[in-house]
Length: 300
Ligand code: CP
Ligand code: NVA
Image (cartoon, rainbow, N blue to C red; front, side, top):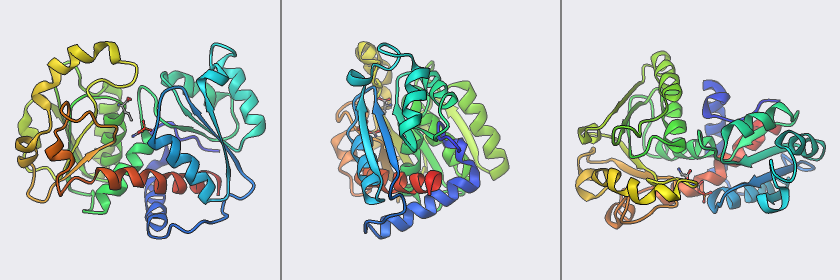
């Protein structure tokens, strides 16, 4: 069974299938029984609203039974080794989905589970978010040939988005302060994928990378686990706030995206969050449709 630890794991054809199925689920919300009799584990080592609720509702709407677990009860790596938790959950569940701090732990879980393992966010990737991001963009414009500019921290959300857009032939600009670029392995992966799709990936510090963009995307400056650095980061990232002036440098029809939760007044202003071309709540809704599609793809 295939795992979904990073957006590239689906391959280009798999990504296309999942997005097309997600679009069908978006158009028709009726409950189905595709996954009747299946049981799905959803584990959270850090807080969550969208991922927690959309994944549980997705399972229910497909007839599966979700089991939601928190770190307080499981003690992943503290009460029990990561590998043993994976071995045990594998005996009960048809799919294991994990939100963890350490991506290496997720790889270890996948190594010790025969059931598919899904990444619900790690320090390196947020691939379920990227699926929703891509679906949201496609509601407005084809990704092939369009320019997506990500402004801010080269983090987990940035990695998955960058790779996903490159897989579908889009152009990606990542703009943020020096020292906070996406990790080299993801940049190389995205550039390699872009070569075969005639996409392009460009990283820099100059805000002119927003000029003419079709999509402007940002995320928090301090991710979960980086709270202690929040003040220092706020200073470094201040020039990269997506405000009305910066958004106006994008194309006249550009849309604004944010994975949420947003820190209004930090990485984005109210004016942009609430702009008529902001699609952040469609994007949040799409987390549900893409997770249903992913479950059917992996288990159906
Ligand atoms: N975007 C996202 O993953 O939100 P949550 O952290 O609330 O799940
Ligand atoms: N980059 C953020 C995304 C939250 C959904 C974090 O990891 O906290």
